[in-house]
Image 1 (tube, rainbow, N blue to C red):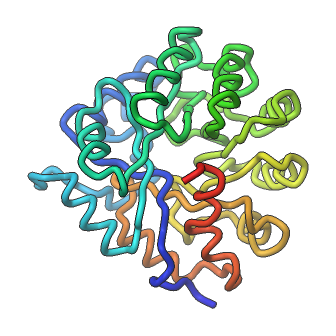
Image 2 (image 1 turned 135 degrees about the vertical axis):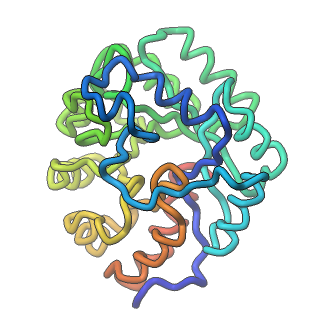
Image 3 (image 1 turned 30 degrees about the vertical axis):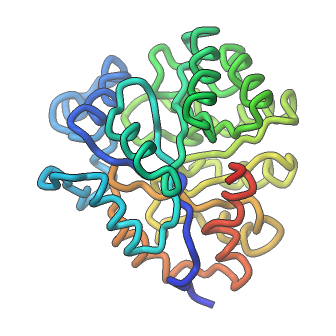
Length: 289
């Protein structure tokens, strides 16, 4: 069966732009960018990979616009990144608690300061996940580095998933910290940790599937990929023994419109029983929604 617009959706990667959100995030790894195009011309750090990046500069109320787009595509809930400098996301979470839930992108270089922040955000905002961009930290911190260990232990204690980018990063920065092979060690040493790979795991998708078969608490979300580019190994795995391991995540408005994502979605050859699991049931279970 093809994708049905009647199935409710949980989006595990959605953003609401404000004047400061993108620049703050971009600046966090500006010192890692070596080429002039990335440094001076790109509005988003992986711009060379995407065309028709959504432009919301003419929207007076970006929260209302995001909700309008969510309603159009039957997205019932969406995960927003939250920190102390993103007022728009704070506002959205406060005004629409049944539509949005929060995640925090952690910096392993900050040690116990970061652990205390995660615990505070969990208490204040019912934090549902900790995310990470290992290649985008300055200095970079590989997924299996000991600097992450206090954060992994904290995620286990709070029973929330850890969601790192895995695979070659879009920005032109080194990929070593995000090699999928590093995840093997983390899942071995922290069997209670729920780990959800973000952003593709390419070119090590076959290894990602092998590790998901090996470790019961390892998952994969489809963030930053238009559905027409979902790796074939992921589609095959979801259609066989991995139907409970693959979760939907978009990339609006960072680089993909929801119109683009859901027009592509109709062509993804998932089996009938996979669609509700992929679009919302797996997220409800893994993120305790």
